[in-house]
Image (cartoon, helix red, strand yellow):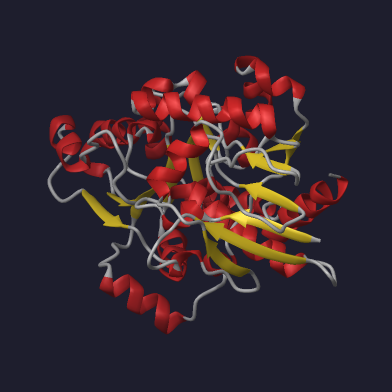
Amino acid sequence: MQAAIFLEQALAPVPGGTGRYSVELAAALARTANQGDSVRSWTAWHRDTTPAVVAGVTGPRRLPVTRRALAEAWRYGVGPAPRGVDVLHAPTLLVPPRRRYPLVVTIHDAVPWTHPETLTPRGARWHRAMAERAARTAAAIGVPTQAVADALAAVFPAVRGVPVHVLGAGVARAVVREPDVEYADRVAGSLALPDRYVLSLATLEPRKGLDVLIDALATIGAAAPQLLLVGQSGWGGVDPAAAASRAGLPPGRLRVLGRLGDPELGVVLRRATLLVAPSRAEGFGLPVAEAMAVGTPVVCSDAPALVEVAGGAAAVVPRGDAGTLAATIAKLLDDPAERDRMALAGRSRAVAFDWDRVAERAWALYRSL
């Protein structure tokens, strides 16, 4: 079987979680392919496609138009598309026109319908339009969690006529791999990691609820540890420093580390006192799974996908409730025994989030089509 995957999101200015999903799924498909199977990748036209090069995957082959032109053409169901494959997986809503081969499309969340205010108006319209196209042309829809499947069924009637499969998601091996002490100390020194800190891992955009976390730490006051934010700036003009100043968070209590490579991220995750995911809406919540996999206690919002991924191993607080979040963080900071219990529970839960298992489910889906 010639399976193809469209890796354009890996080349986006801010790849985000969907970019990581695309690359990790492609790598796992290559690792789990049967004899005689192969995986190819495709992108729009870029001079440099290095970020989309994946071990074991042939390509990427480039379509003869740029990302922006391709997105606009595909919105109307026209334009070039991959050829010579048996099945194509579009891991985002950048969905090609109908072709003779079966198409699998991953829809990561129901945010364009349930929380459109957390996207740009243009982005919300584009996602809804492309989801409608996917519902008309896809042989199957993949989702990362049952929470997304349920939400789509409730708010997106067109999807009810397409088979929806919960494929899941995983944690990158480079994040989970235990670093040697010398490397970990070198990373900690270069990033000036404090002995105790709260970590948030997310693209800096309104949906991630960073304002709620900053307000919560300001409520804790002088006893609050430093907050480290890992992630690139997204849309919406989210300015953590300005938010910290408005909330009254003491100077120096917040640092933005930007985007980190997987080995560095593994160190930062392991050394965190807590990982806090206060998102208003999610489709999976990869930072929760990553933190649990390395034994870092997690506090997350009650967004259904986060609750599903945490599986009882995290402390859950109501979305947007800075007061309850502050009380929960303060209690855990003072209770090392509870943090140890949560770390053990998290490691046990995170075993379920393995990319090879996701790829095996995807291969089974491809064969069924």
